[in-house]
Image (cartoon, rainbow, N blue to C red; front, side, top):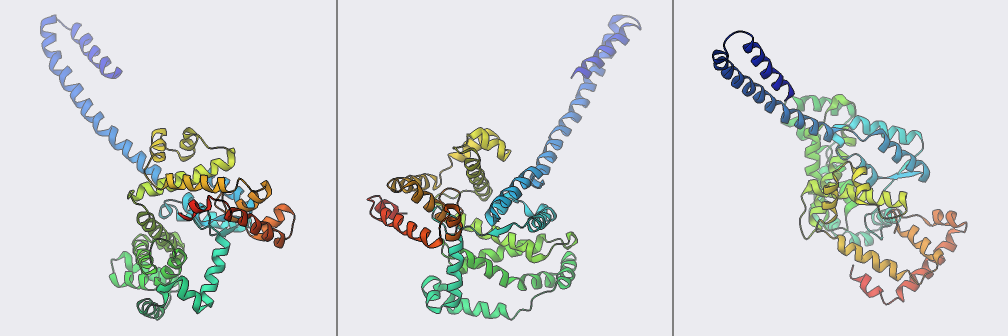
Length: 391
């Protein structure tokens, strides 16, 4: 706007130096009207376009070195990182798969491993792996825990996809090149060769709010998207890329199924990220974080963070459950409380083995088992146990 004023004043000054004021006013008026209109039009067109481009670019940005560095340091302290931590860190994996693979190489270089963590307050990740191993080995356990697997339709589906040969890396690249030429046959072969990958991932989510058949179906949708988005020129394996699309599709479906009030998919991911950061800040600060601190960590406006906190979800029920668990542990000694917190992942969502807890307290794993059993007996005798059973 200062430039416009300068141009107008320049016109008046020039016109004032050339003759009578009456004739110069008549010629100056149309010029003064035209120039502001032209400049304003150009200004209005450029402003929103540049703003939109900036916003889109931010969404595709990979996690910052600071964020990745914190996760590496955390992994080095513990010796592992969880798959959930990776999912929350790399939310738009397809936009920066090269950064993700470089990060995996760095974790491997410093000796950091992966641990799968079951969601929920009473999750036991490593014990769940033992359960799956028993399921694979025991026909009786399979009938009890995974009745879907013995159904004829599941067995028939598994037999059919088992006949499809797997692809080598060279074959994947060749099919990806053909896919770029819009050859539907190449897309079909990429999909069919990875159907077994979907089943192996879907089995890890059995026991939640969806059947194995539905989980496989949702995973297949994620596989279709992975095939559409796959870019062989970046050099990563298709199975690595597809795994994250499949997991994302299944977790989104589970999130939709488990809520009485449906929350849009993009908000589900935002809420998950919010909860992850909130838990991390609780660990780092030793207290409940302020909304301002969460907003700064998420890189989101303060109002949006406050909105996320009041979204109608199962948050109230979870808070009640948390209170009941804390109250039921009031009769335990500090040592017993700490052991249960570590064994069941009550504070950070990560459960620890008997050996890990034993090292923490400098006692044997058998002694930890005895203390845990005694503490659980005390909780069973607590009147609040009836309220906990409702969950």
